[in-house]
Picture 1 (tube, one colour):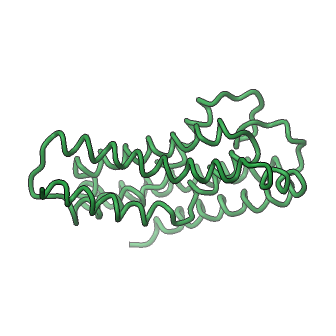
Picture 2 (cartoon, helix red, strand yellow; picture 1 turned 90 degrees about the vertical axis):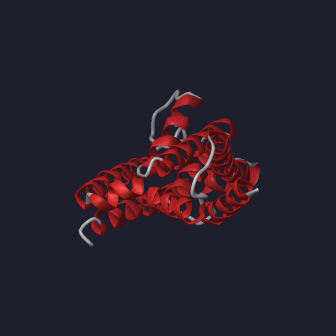
Amino acid sequence: MQELASLASIVAALSIGVISPGPSFVMVARVAVASSRIRGLATALGMGAGGAIFGAAALLGLQSVLLAVPALYAGLRVLGGLYLCYLGFLIFRSARRPLMVVDADGHAGARPFRAFWLGLTTQISNPKTAIVYASVFAAFLPPSFSMGFAAALLAAVFCVETAWYALVALLFSSAGPQRAYLSYKSWVDRAAGAVMFGLGLKLVTSAAKP
């Protein structure tokens, strides 16, 4: 009964956090509107896999490691921020190009696996998310838990992340948003690229703060 209550509390807390806008939202929306519903959903699956990785890291005590070695956390923030800046630059650079691309990083002929990988790498590029997971887990995990509970928790994390971003993908891949995107492609791409670059830059600069 205690494990069930802990599971429900963690899922509720993460469900609130996952809907907050950030790099993951920008990427899923951009892939869905500029490419296809299938690739948008593949990106959502990548986000879910990234969330499960964060969940597993939290169960293994990642927060304690990052707090014990501040330089490691700062380094991860710099690397993750630079990666987001890179993605933002690629999106911004493709603003004036005809709509030949099928993924968010400007490569033609991409397969859903590339979209999945893009979602996964975008999700895990932000180590602050790992801290959020670790904090939520620390607050609600029971003192001891079974392997079944751990497996159920990681499955729930995957489902929460995937479900939200799948909803985003379905929304932005519908006819209305895609027509609007085609009409204002250069402006939308510039805005999405600038937002992604700004989020990455914020992550990099935050690494210098205690």
